[in-house]
Image 1 (cartoon, rainbow, N blue to C red):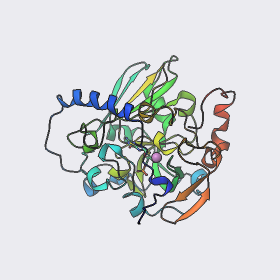
Image 2: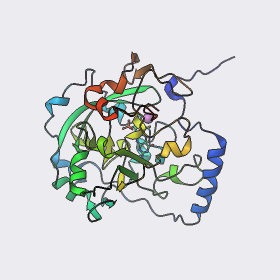
Image 3: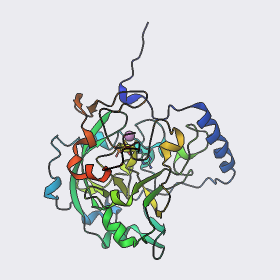
Image 4: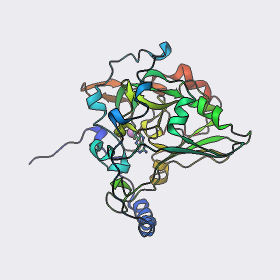
Length: 320
Ligand SMILES: Nc1nc2c(c(=O)[nH]1)N[C@H]1C(S)=C(S)[C@@H](COP(=O)(O)O)O[C@H]1N2
Ligand SMILES: [Mo]
């Protein structure tokens, strides 16, 4: 008898309790009434991307070497987690249909004055740099990417939060007419939009990076165009794609995966090989494109930059 063995990372993150799914399915059914089917816009990629001339950007020498070879671009742009477009890793052609211009980012919450920024106006206010970072998915695979972008701290500066702000909350688009995964019931029911968050201290960290490019050009739709986060010391689900809203909050936001399975995914989600996921070990990772399995490091090897952020937080679930 033939038994297909799944690799560790093939265990879908969506394998959560039926209760959660049932609850969210009902919510989704209610939302279905409001959904309108529209024609899909033409993809604004490649030569037509108005930001194409900004790339490649200079590499920041601090992050010029990730200690491992860069993962092939062709592999990375076609092996993705992007549940808005489906639950498999093969969503790149579906994601290519997401129109990425015009694109605005709303900034609200605890700020001096709420504002809306067009992506190309935002790009004029920042200076782009390249950083080569390791990325560790909670599913126990990893990759190395030459990202282009600017520090999250720069966006915080532009947003001018008040002293009351304790967290930054990010939201992805919610467009079921373009993203099949957001259509109620097609791939299961999820609490759209995708939400993530960091503390203000984490947002100020040297490592926290807003990504607009990769591999020396505008970032591919499948990897989160036109703007996504990258937090290399945390599990990959924290690195939210296609951001349309940044809110400064007093309350800690509940992220997408927490809403689905709070017993499996937390807010902090710092990488730690000694704290297993409830359903699999986090001790090792498969480096995609190589077939190698290597030991996972605390904070994904970025402890020098971020360990001090968590001093005295022993009561918190820092590693799930
Ligand atoms: N909006 C959104 N952002 C997301 C996800 C998602 O499903 N939707 N998946 C996350 C997960 S689990 C990972 S591992 C990374 C994958 O990034 P990549 O496709 O560039 O490898 O994106 C993260 N950001
Ligand atoms: Mo992930």
